[in-house]
Image 1 (tube, helix red, strand yellow):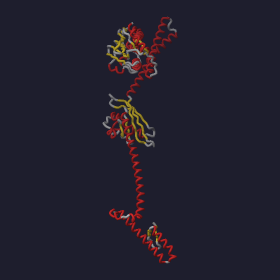
Image 2: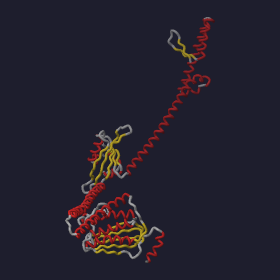
Image 3: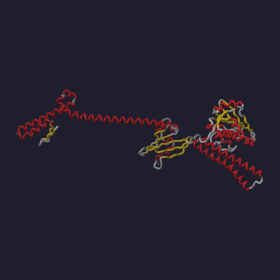
Image 4: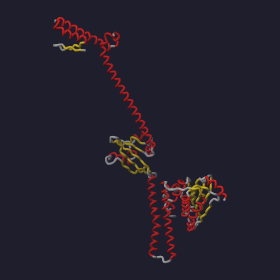
Length: 479
């Protein structure tokens, strides 16, 4: 397309390529052929330009009006449509490319949103399965999420109610903690308190920890508050304090006696050799008492940590019981008790650690002797019952209240009603329970009635592990 601007006239006349060539030829031929030829060439050029303009206008009109498209001919309109169609095609290609890119971006965003929804659902499910209550609050301290344990703790029926409820309505103490954590985030991201929940009669103790949460760019998002129940921890701390007090008392009493008698011997207060020998015997008894206390504590610690060396072997149960029986005989005689042995006449084959199991039986017999008044009776029995070997220690002592039975084998626990009857640390029965259940795959049960006595029964698997010993068993039993 060419454009001709005429001097003295502001009109711009578009010319087709052929018309422009004819016009230029006429202008060049003017000086040679004369004015008539130049005028004729210019007239032809303007005529051709006007015809081309009309054809384009008509073609555009037919494009705008569908009812006129039937009159379009390829020969007439091909030149007119070529530029329009070419530009339209280029625009359509660009639009198609843009649409494809937009569709791909939409697919990518939908896939990312789907993955994030799945991750969010997985996270909420994981938090719901947690045993510790957890609450998430926003900048206005409103609950945005509460897991299942938190809904139970605060008696919320559903997750939607948890999201609508404010923490100040649930717990003012925790609300203050959350508010302080949020408002003083510059001083620290985490704060903790201990909180009592419920009525005084059945209150539960909790350690509540609130933590500020930020995104990767350091922007503050909210506060996460975790509740951890610490009733057992408090009880254990109390038992540890009682244990330390008991151990100190148990250590202090014999040490004080040893020190006093040692000073008397050093000062020469005993001229009689018989008196001196008696004092030496007392000192030896106190040393033995201290040794047993320390051994019990060390053995219990080793069993619980799994570092104790267990040497189980095939043996005859009654041999182990007889040795333990003889250890406590003197103690029973000194207290005026009747100690009775009712061991089975049969060969009771077992697989156990002689020393550790013997110590467990000694602890049961010693407890029976300590808590049985003078003139009472302590019996040791053994029997076989449906693949199990059973050992029973029965006494006619003080008995144990029913409410104390569930805690009897806890470390450091002592029956409150019987504390004054005999000294102790509360480790003996805990050690027996660990030896029987953890090291010998057995069980330990107790029956007791206050004022009538108690019966402790140990059950361990019956039989030898070694094939050679199993073959010898009938011959030994015959003896």
